[in-house]
Length: 78
Length: 420
Image 1 (cartoon, rainbow over the protein chains, first blue to last red):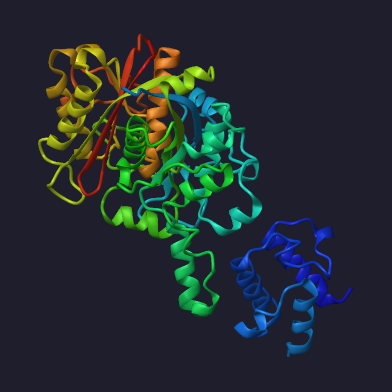
Image 2 (cartoon, rainbow over the protein chains, first blue to last red; image 1 turned 45 degrees about the vertical axis):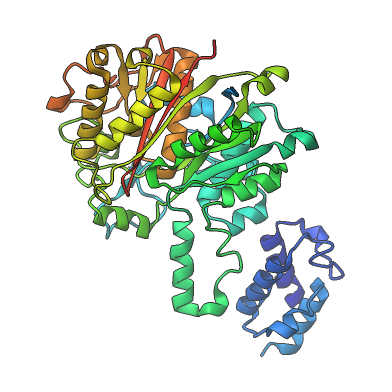
């Protein structure tokens, strides 16, 4: 598992209060991890802080799974 | 006429995370006061408070018991305390498995005096330091006063009236009184009612200290600072926590064989129309509030055995309240016991009226009245009144009166009595 994936999963576990095993790369934030739209806003903010990236609203709207988040961060971090 | 009884209790206080622990500590004359641990208070005038203790303390509070991890992250502590106290009350009342029809007739009236002050303070700093894009999306609904009622209704599926009182330090009493009326009026059969507060944060302590409301003379002896009716009192000690009761229509409670603690028989309300922080100099608002509560209860002062006073330990407030009680009770003052449990747990602000009404109910249940701590040298105006100094006292308690008065000149009184 990549370093980015590790850090993303840690944030998801902390923010959503879910079991670490449930946070697979395929997991959907809303369908599998019990997040609502505001939780995703909060997660995106946490990713921005953690990785020093800007995730604009239109990009954030496309982040549906854990893998979507990891991929976006890996291709946009400085 | 529909009667309203109490069938469940829940408490989170500086002396315990449940009803029985808090009550036994209150009766044992313990104090919940100490140096502030939540933040560095060294630059403040006041360094003391009655904090709810952490989970690893002998009578500490564990938020994980009844509040989801995600909710804990999103909301201010007053909401966490409120959800937990409401959960305790529902469990105590045996209402954790209500059917759909019952849930439609069950509501919430849980308020707060100030709401999410620590979160407003910390997110304001985020805004100033990092900009609007870093403000939490949960900022608003994690701080709003009606979000205890909101969260509790969602958690337990309560679809009846959803209400939240905001009347400063009268909130807890108004919440119970208003909810009792909703049941009387037929709007609901069950109401979770009470109040919560958690404002032990830099802006909360500074704000009340600047208003000259807090004790500052006992920073080195925190347990001595809250001393209602004592000559050396110099302000209140901030407390925090929550109190929630289950109110239920009497026949509804009887039909399901519920344990009935007491009946809510009287509710009085008034306004001072005088000053934003100072009580009316003749205690007229306090007098009228108590008078109305007794009238509604169909009682006279001789029927009341215990008064849980507002008694915050401020120089003016204690005296004026006692003066109002004296005028209302006349000769009957000799037969009543009146104490301030704020001497033990501090002033829970919006939670106070609910927590103290629960103490009134427990006084009736156990036929014992809780003490006023630190009453070493009673003020001159207190002669001839049993203020229950230092130690709890066994005595007959048929009915009890709770007083709560708040900034803005808002007053509420509740009368509870044993069910015949």
